[in-house]
Image (cartoon, rainbow, N blue to C red; front, side, top):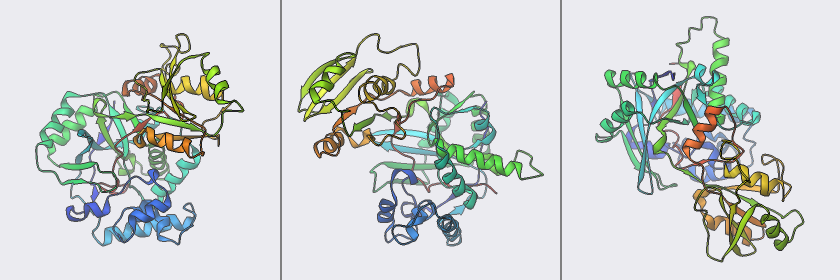
Length: 416
């Protein structure tokens, strides 16, 4: 059962929240963070992208960059740009995109739940990325950015969300750089806090939607601190890390598409002919074509769009991994025809989040940078839950959740 608890959030004052809040560290590079933070000393990028405080070209993994993160974090607290709540609270965080709002509950998630598999993952993590985030958590002694969780829809928790969403929020703004609405309510009422804690305690598992590396780093640092504390009790703040947990039905998963540099020595015609072995191939002309159902793909090649529909027998509906379109395309197109074996390391392939639209795929092919593009139908939240429950791992670059959680609205300190 999911063990969660409230915490004393470290937050920006209401009047400067838009100056402090930022996009997550991993959705933009150093140059983009530098540009967005230009002229704004209150931007969280100074902590989560601390290399921007050095001359351009600074290696973001240098030890003094992590030290700079700590220096900036202390500065933010000293100046009152981040101030801690007086009592442990839960928070409701709503995001609005394209007229749809999703409501999550900001919680302290339990480290032991992660280590024991009650917080379930569906992706592999890379050790180098884990270690980078672990260094960041260690030096700050805090979780600066939340992890994105999902949980099966729950009447009690939905009731709490419904109760608060009609009241005056603490924060309510539209972010300049993503155009999405971000709204936060504080839950400080003791009875509501207990109701939330008890409701989560009846939920068997939580599911990582986005932020696998942050989850791993936060949990591993918490476990380190437990091992190094001779008086460890299990109730210390480091036994918890910050997450925003959303009812599964609220979430939007969009496509995560592929672009390839070459056709493995094949001509366009030869490539299309090979595709016909496993797919029904239909030319759609110059008009953008978007996949409209599972097992239907969109191919852009030579200035034309094609519909590819996987033939019966090329996938197994009873295999939670084998039935995924990302598996079908990886096995039958990328591996068998194009000879791309490892999606994590191959330099012949790149990945494009569906938030950029099909136009981005066309642009990268028409520019000559890429030879062809493949658009996929998005996976469902139920598929992710089924895979996580089975203990299986999804292929790389399968899911893209949007909108992304805004960083800097709430921070969790590991020593309270």
